[in-house]
Structures are given as C-alpha cells and as structure tokens.
Amino acid sequence: MIVILTALVQWVHVAAAMLWVGGGVLLDVVLIGPLGRAPIERRRLIGDFLAPIATRFFAVTGGLTILFGLVRGTVLGPVTTLDALDSGYGVVWLASLLLTIAIAILGGRFLGPAFRRMQSDAALWKSGPDGGPTGELEAALRKIRRFARAQSVGFALVLAGMVMMGLGVV
Ligand code: HEM
Picture 1 (cartoon, rainbow, N blue to C red):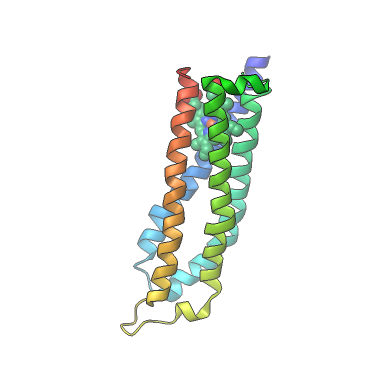
Picture 2: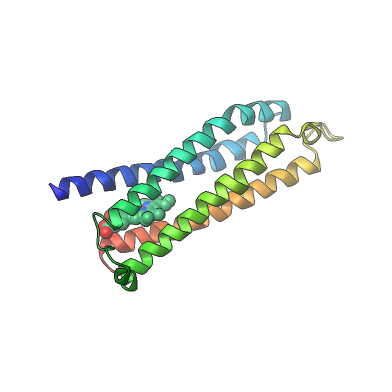
C-alpha cells in the first residue's frame, strides 16, 4: 500500500516538475525567441494574452512540485527527523527545497512582475526610428531573459540533486 502511495506522490511530483520546467523552456526558447522577430504590436498582444495564463500555470505546477517533493522526502521518505538532514540525502533534499523556493520566488516576484511591467508600459512599445523595437524594450527583454537563464541554471542543479537521490548515491 505504502509503495503505491509513494509511486502516486512521486508521479504527481515528477509530472508537475516536468510541466513547470518544460513550460518555462517552451516560453523562453520557442515563444520569446522567435517572437522577437515578429512585429512589435503582435508581440505585445501575444504577451498580454499569455501573461495571466503563464502566471496561473507556473503557480500551480511550481506549488505542486514543492508540496509533493516535501511529502515524498518526509512522510514517504527518509527525512523524518532533523538529524536526517545531516545525511547526504538530507543535505541534497534540503538544498533542492531551498533552491526550488528561490527559483519560484525569482519567477513570481521578479520575472513575472518585470514581464507585466514591460507589457503595460506603452512608451516601451513605440516603434524605434527604424520601425523596430526601441532600445528600452530590448533592455526590458534582456532583463527578463537574464531571470529566465538564472532559473534554468537552478532547475538543472535541482534536477542533478533529484537524480542523485533517485540513484541512491547520496
Ligand atoms: C523544479 C524542481 C524539481 C524537479 C525538476 C524535480 C524532479 C524530480 C525527478 C525527475 C525525480 C525522480 C528522480 C529519480 O527517481 O531518478 C524527483 C524525485 C524526488 N524529488 Fe524532486 N524535483 C524538483 C524539486 C523537488 C523539491 C523542491 C523537493 C523537496 C521538497 C523534491 C523532492 C524529491 C524527492 C524526495 C524525490 C524522490 C527521490 C528518491 O527516489 O528518494 N524535488 N524529482
């Protein structure tokens, strides 16, 4: 019975994490990249449409990833006492938890708001002298990409920790 429950919790955890990381990569690589070549009015329109959907999607998938990772490591895993945090598994588990919370804060408190500020600032969306985006718009996009890149590095590190725990090498 406990094995089935553990499998279910881990399934939800991994599925949510896949959607969270995959959704971010999709936005970053597939949408924001090629979208940079579309006319700027169209870029703003697509951004307006996507922002609220992405905010809800990342809140749900990020929240489920953290919640089910907590349960999988504690109630259904070896981190049952504070002393367990002294083991290799405990250290990797706690580091992953803290890093994932940092990634979530980076998304929810910095990347998301920076994107919404960019979308709502009409001055940024005026065409530049050559009809293309203004330098200010490009700078706002660069800032957002920097946040996204920092999140990707964090995701890669957490995933490495997950594999180490899964393989039993910590
Ligand atoms: C974006 C962040 C995360 C991703 C992409 C992720 C991904 C994964 C994956 C793919 C596995 C299966 C590993 C395997 O069996 O080889 C896993 C397992 C696990 N994850 Fe995460 N995870 C994330 C965040 C977290 C967090 C924040 C926690 C703790 C609160 C956590 C706790 C666990 C635990 C305890 C396992 C089971 C390891 C074992 O087999 O003993 N994960 N995770």
